[in-house]
Image 1 (cartoon, rainbow, N blue to C red):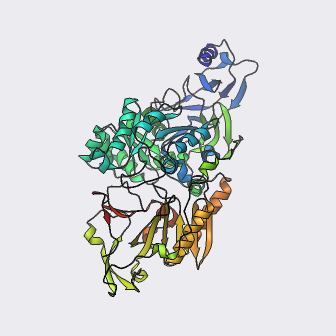
Image 2: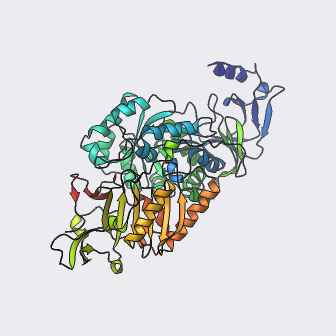
Length: 582
């Protein structure tokens, strides 16, 4: 409150500002107008805007913004830092030059490995960082009742963490069957958030009446890339929409055509690896894409600033150039191209012309965050064999062959596969490969056949949304074992194997998800493993980026019927295990 009193003194001209930004055109996201004016800054906050001459003292520093627009710092409404493959402080080095000054982080990735210790690590990384990281309590630890991960967060844990500084709400509620079935752990987390009067986030785009039920539970938002009709239904039900870009381009185009009031719409990135940040940008790219979709430019800036801040109930701190708010400012030369020339946080220039201009210390991560893969022994090809059921003499068996993103009748997944020496074989001629999930703590292996994979070699990784055990897809059992063992030796990461040797690898030693190495080296590592994976002749469902596609391939949170876990195939409606062959 002492600083607040001093801000009043600066606004009234009784005390000199520490810094003024002169000559810019302010982007007023409250009224969606361009307003010429100056900004006076004191103790990291804005003291006044407009005519600031009376607040200029002998020691006031002046920042020239002639010919530039001045915007509030960009805010990502829903994000997973872990998906960048970088630690928060390394991630800030990469994203600050793009104008992202605040992030609302859902840490269910690291918390599924480390529980609340993972959340505490993110808060520790955020201390003194020139990028604001607001953290939510993850609702998906574990992702479903049928999985066991390294963490557990229920109502008791949520209540405790909601009292921590920097924790602002409850992360995305994804498990609809558990929500609608009143599963105790998930409801305990939601109720803790509602009792604390905190924001509770949602996920996906369910149709009515599921959308109504989701809203009735207390969930107030959802991030999506669905079509406009679905988006309108969600807006009608009071959801704040966090549109993921660029995938949500069609959503924005259809909302523009519908002529919506944009107050309940924001922008987010959700997940983006570091090499994609380098190629596409970050929230600057989201604003640019919104403008390309037909959103009026000043509205697009509003979607990435004030709207996101208001949803998270922090518009008194961030998201607008106004007195009392943090002086997180962007100097922009081209309004539509969103060319960020300068980035100020707390009134201090931290990036200029796309380059970081401040020092960000990189402390050593605690050892317990680096020792999270503890296989009891190296795996062998036998761990990935699927034995045929009796009688052993038969030459073919029926198998459940999964497909990516399959939501239909399980009967459609039944195929016949050959048997050799009592072991069920892949059928690469039909694109049928083998995948497995390996429990990173006890080495348990769940194996099944998939209509997706690589024509040769194997890829293993400890990035497995959202349990973050180890996934592996391979054309031979021996290469699958080699790839998993290499991931374990690195303490987590990505390993691409071909011809019985490791072709490329990326260590991610912190929780098996992130690296605190320099971003350039991590991005180069990402490029190498992606290039090596593309050389293995991935099947079409893995797309142009098979590494990223594999990381999401085994999600259990979607309302699909069957999923592969470290315990094997699970019927998500009943929780029963399903044999892979019979």
